Image (tube, rainbow, N blue to C red):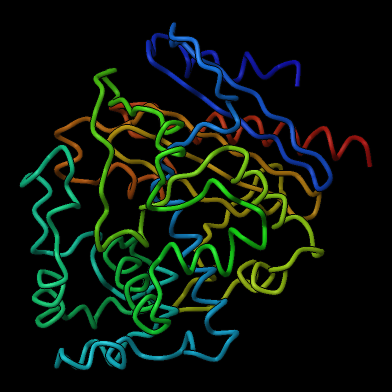
Length: 356
């Protein structure tokens, strides 16, 4: 795309250690582009460098729910209380697994006993299953059931339930149901030594290098690392009905009526040029990610950056990413990659429409 540099120039400006990888996907074709301000030379192709993808992980957790449901190990209509028999709380018998996947459980963004400031550099690593049990024992958000409220803890609970029901680790589920069938060999929570050699350092919005996050029991909400190659293959699979997990992906594309909203398993819904798109973004202390696609015209986009839009103070409150989902407005403190992705996808849609 000849205008690509113009789309990314404002984002890439003045980010000294930046690595930005872009995948532009059509049903039968993937093009990769990369931008780097890092003076260190690397022999690793840009499409094979690994990034934290943050909350895009939630899409995969929702796909795993649908895959395990297809094997009749559980139902998305099952109540959460069924899977936590050691916790006696009637609220958990009022919310279903599908409420966790669609952010309609009423659960808050974070558990009320989760203090992100306790370990600012790695804020999820300290939160244990015992902490989660303590939170769920007294949680009651009955009045908010059915209303959309973005919840990291909700999808974390879903990921934990899927692992317990299947008797598998999260990575084992990913490999069995998604990454192996789609040949996404670089996508996992836990990386091996070779993959760690391709795992980029992350940087805060100030440019300061920050540690990688360990999501611990929140792995289903944001723990995956991946490459633009793998995520482009994933988007490509969503554009086609001829792939090994097409039935699962197709179900995730169907909106469900919950409360007063039509919502998707894992995805956010939006429009660009009057065309429906499904999308998700992600952010951690040192990374920012975005993917989106339109199935009608069979085009999609992936962007991965090793710069975060967070600052330390805003990590403590963890509101920026949630605000994006609710208000569709950019946070003022840093630049998210979403706006760049939307502009590129809009150009792709416009081009495909003109060729019809």
